[in-house]
Length: 459
Image 1 (cartoon, rainbow, N blue to C red):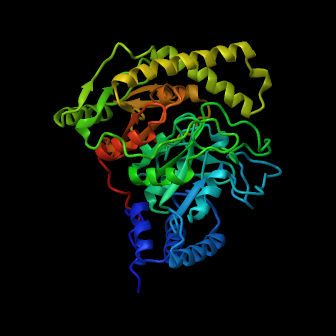
Image 2 (spheres, rainbow, N blue to C red):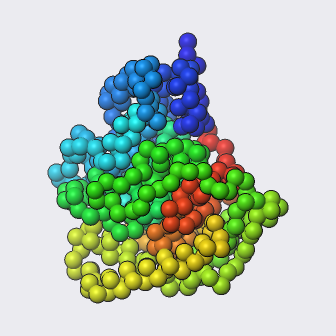
Image 3 (cartoon, rainbow, N blue to C red):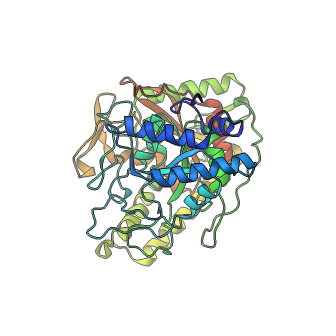
């Protein structure tokens, strides 16, 4: 009888090697993944669209491809994708309750690329309405809970994605990030998530329901992989990266970064933000990593005159983000004049130039992903009335946007990676921000500096 690898701890790369060495078949991995979801996902509620029959058929095809030596890079690897991506034959809701659900007629480009590489797509994972919360609860599929503590959020909007990875329901995921929606769920669930350089991944087939499927993708928004290791994210990127006819970004190099060990990096540490706070556990972890880097011989700076005005940048990011959200919602009455929006684009361009100057002196900008571990679920609909507990004191919920806005407004890559747990035994995370098209540098840094947390005990 075949011994199935531990689906909760095995990396996608390890599963890939097990498949190629014939230690396990794609069909066996698929069945084991389905059984795990059916047995354990009830209280977590991560995988809310289950395409198991098609997954079984695709796994059988993968076994034939592996037998002939023709399998793609992810041949037979079990995966899920965020609900907001089109999956042929299923609704794409973005968490909205719709009288007439939009049923996708074809897969999103990224899903097509995954399937072409032999990945076995088990289904889709949960999101909040309009992808606009750091929780993942909607009227269609209910609430996703953090597998480390069911009373707490798994993050959002790719909350189901990260919860599925932490729970061992799938080996890889693809989410999206415009307001921390890959990085924060990865942080809350103790896994790795890459917010990619803007424009290097296609978002075709990632549109709100009933929107023109050929509508321009939102400014700032990117897709990005989520996984149990940084090398898994690099593996996924080799499959999903690449322009289509409507994707503006430049080509991504998959060459190994020049940095091979922690001491090779030049790192700017940002522990303080004019808007966002971080609690003592996150600040301590950040300082521990900084000291480890110094001990390894890295160049580490805790300040630089090159850092732009982060408060001003954050205000402009928020205004651009709110304009994008209003447009998604069709809220024409809350639109801004075209010239005002173009002024925001000019400010973004200036900020990108300022960040490029930083990366002439540093390889990585290191800062918290979020100021705490995962927070308890809240039903308060108004963000302005929500608060985050920082070391026993309430701080405004939305201010945590400060940590993620630097990479987003700068169109830069950033990898969230685990570095320990907080006083509530919840995972905490830092993010490694890199230069334009420096996605592989971010992943290498995360691989070398991460301090993985124990997976949640699910039974």
